[in-house]
Every structure is written in structure tokens, then in C-alpha cells.
Image 1 (cartoon, helix red, strand yellow):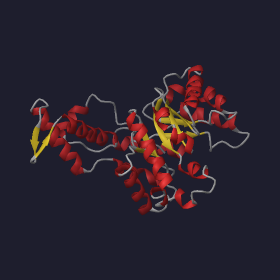
Image 2: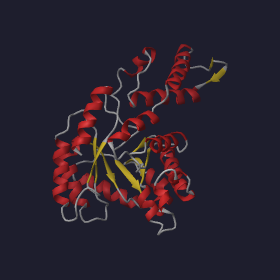
Image 3: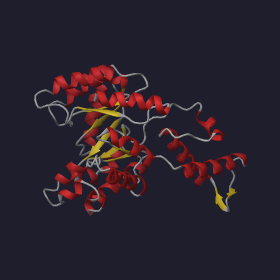
Image 4: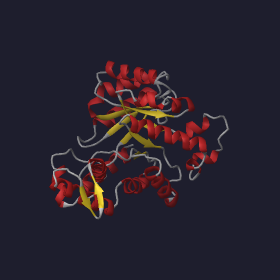
Length: 307
């Protein structure tokens, strides 16, 4: 966790803004019986971070005996330094309500919730969960989702390329992405466990971003961060095209325009603006002609990757 925070600080200095979040883990990170000590350590780490850092915490599931203590300790003491709270094993809207109530009781009602969807039942309720006003993002928990099927999905579907080809896994990913976009929330793709296989990672990240509609992704190793950022960032050509379209539209007071022999109107303007926003958030250099549009905007924040 300390190494992740140090890397975040280094890349924040490099990109001029924080381009990924660090999630401090209590669910899988805490030893059995040592949950309270682990929560105290996570709290101290969060409190020690720089103001520009984006730090989150993954607490225990709402039905775990350590859940309320996690929230009371970490959100109660360090809630002002957190960007969100990740709640794993979310099965229904009631779990979100219980998490929100615990955060409110800890004095952290400002904190959004990121829900981790990890079972067939949770996928079925993804649209309801995404619609909750406290939910900011849905994440897909691949390995728990596969395990929840009692061996009906082979182990190959936990890795790549299997996670992009097995029909049940593909359906779950698409449901989560669709539910997120339908409710204006952020879909966050699952991890790629083959962190030493650069080609597997690049292929998986590209498919997650280009085919499955995800705008954010988890990493489990520092070596994955830059490839993920690159895959989720628009290309130089996309940035140039969107810049040309939007500057032409601005000159026309946002009436329809002809750029390169193609008609563009407000529907495409929204798309092209999102391209530039993605470029800004992933630390890409924008042309001077549109850079002024972002001068009053907050520093880049993570909308693409959450290690």
C-alpha cells in the first residue's frame, strides 16, 4: 500500500494531476482476527497522504462482523481524506442502504460508494444498484463471479482471453457496463491477473475500453498502470479530430458544421467533448487551442483506473 501511494505521488508530479486512485484494502488485506489492527493502519496511511492524493478504502462486506468497525474507524477518522468507499459483495440495494447508513453514522455522508458486483444475483440487480444516488461506480469482481457458479464456469474464464469469451462472463460485464451508463455512473473493469504478460494485459485493456464500454479499470501491479492509462486515453488522432470539430462548432455558435465532409451537430459535440475530457483526466497533452477550456477545471482525477 505504501509503494502504491508513493507511485501515485510520483505520477501525479509527472502528469500534473492524479491519474489513478489507490484503494487500501481491508477485505482481502486484513488477516483473520486482525481486522481492527488493519483498519487502524489503513486509517493512518490515509491520514498521512498529501492533499492531492486520491485514496479510497475497500471495507469488509456489509454482512461481515468487521464491516461497521471498518467504517467507524476509517471513515470516521479519515473520511475527509478519502475519495470513495468500496463495498464488496454487494447483492442488492439494501446492502447499499446499509453501507450508506454506516457512513452517515460515521460522519462521512459526503463519501460516494463504489459497489463491487460479484455474483449472478448481483448482476441481475445491477440496474437497481446503479440507480442508488450514493453509488458512483460499479466494479466487476470476476473471480468471485466465476466461483459463485459452483464449477459451471471453467477456471480459464478467470484469466485472459477466457474472461472475454465465456458467454456468462461476457453477459455479466455487459450488464454492469450498461447499468452504469444508464444511470450516469462509472463502470470499472476487473483485474487482469497475468501481470507479467504484457501482451495479455494490452489485449484485455483494449477490449475492456473499446468493446465492453468500461471507462475505468483495476490494476493489481504497478507495471499495469501505464498500459491501462494508455488504453483508456484517446489517441492523438482522436484528440486532434475532436479538437477540430469542437473549435469549428464554437466558431459557428454550436450550430451544425461540416468538418472533413461530414456533418456534425450537438449529438456528436457531446461525444467529442467527452474525448477531450478523457484526455484531460488521463494526463494527455491537449492542443493549446482547447487547453483554455480546462484552465478552471479541477486537476485530472481518476476516471479510468483504480489499483
